[in-house]
Image (tube, rainbow, N blue to C red):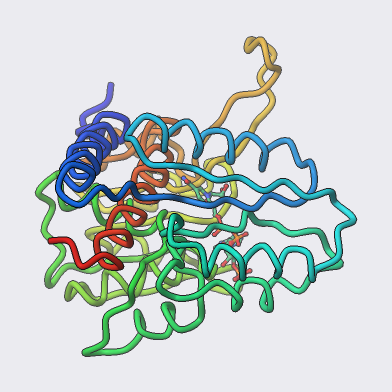
Length: 295
Ligand code: NDP
């Protein structure tokens, strides 16, 4: 039976969304400005369409305006760039998000570079990522998923300063910014990745583990120091004949084992996932406040 505290991402994300909603209406009343998020979706990947739909619904639920552009898979890259430029110039838009992955004929770097950093609510612009990595610099935005991980730790009252943290995975969108955020908050951070030999030797020393790999149940109970805090970013479909969809979602951490050893753990689903969208809403609000100098 589980002994770890379950970190309820769904409920914490709701708190964040409620706070955003209150600020959105305060801003609207005070200066008549409604924050706006623009989403660009290219192609018809089902998962991407679902993410975009969820983001749109989430915007509505907190009173943020959403603008959507859908382009066919075979659109020229210039078409995407054109929409980005027009959103860059549009005063009703405070956040611009290009849903990834883009079709293979497009240059993702070039597209992400085109988003002006003041509206880069995904935090994927190299200037924002660079500032995140530098001391005494502040990014305008931090990528939503790692920010959500840190927000979970903060709101659970879990201390970071002086702790040993291990991040598993080093992607631009999750692992690397998660490691940088932890380091900025004075954790001692180790990053392990696909070329690390014996990653469990590192994780066993960790007070905090953030797993962002994409490998179902990779982190076993034996990888975890008793009492450690485990944040599981992974979202992996695994076959499940008992589910009506034929699959279910599991994390990168073997929850059954880990929840007996950790002191606190995020479930999948219902952990980091809901926080990602909540952070996107929060980033969009922060952007609108900054652009309109509203305190
Ligand atoms: P990527 O595939 O971009 O990165 C995976 C990382 O894991 C890479 O750095 C890779 O190493 C590393 N890795 C792969 N295999 C191993 C291994 N055996 N041991 C140690 N490290 C390994 O994935 P993302 O970062 O985009 O996503 C990670 C997971 O998080 C996925 O399951 C994804 O679905 C989920 N996710 C969840 C979100 C949410 O909202 N909750 C949002 C975004 C992602 P290397 O660099 O050497 O290749």
